[in-house]
Length: 361
Image 1 (cartoon, rainbow, N blue to C red):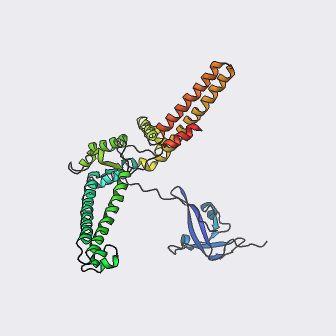
Image 2 (image 1 turned 90 degrees about the vertical axis):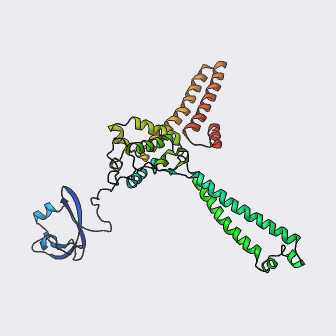
């Protein structure tokens, strides 16, 4: 019987080993082989350290110890075997020094807590200042145009308003310098207006989010009084959290989940990474993705009920075959249409034309 070697010298292989109770895969390279009896044996080398596996002992063949210790010895075929991954790293609040480090860790630990000052007053002051600068430059340009038109000593000076080349050829180029200054001021003004518009587009934090952050400030006092007073400027606070399609209903569901906080609720809506963020019993984190799934299920159930109930009610009324039942069926249709529109408007952020189209359908 001809014995064919399973591996060649230079092949990359991996060994599945048991280390500390876990199955792991280690990569090795075949450096030698032999066939003392009816099976091949191999010497393996660690490609990282260059050391021979188990001090160069021959493994394989009919060696019973080899078979019991190594679950398999197979060549790589492009994809490496799955190995035990290291645990994820989570920044905890307690690991950060008190003060701004802990405050930054808390605000970044959840999108609902990312609350900062918008400085709307300072934006308005800067815009007014730049606006007044442009107003003065505009007034200066108008005066220069009127003087050139009325007080031109020569026909060439009068024609400078009709020709840019003639105007630029004047001594000192006053209008060109003034327009260049206006251009620079306009660029600064336009850029600042665009940034102020982006800032205004941010939403204010919800009452629940603001109350959560404010309570954390009151309980821990992370900063000195003068520097943590910004949290009291409620009307000037913005949140970096994106507005969602059904933000109002989401907030209601999250509030209910927080009130029903128990071991089962934490098991369903809290991941191990979120649980590891803090040991503070007053701070609870819930997975936004899992909450979104719950909100989607509740909305789907609500829509199904609103669509099925009027059909059933109208079918029951149609079986009566009376004039009163026909009027009642029309009333049922109108009531459920209004109810559907109201729920669409309250539970979601649908626009008016979207609500109208959904109600008409």
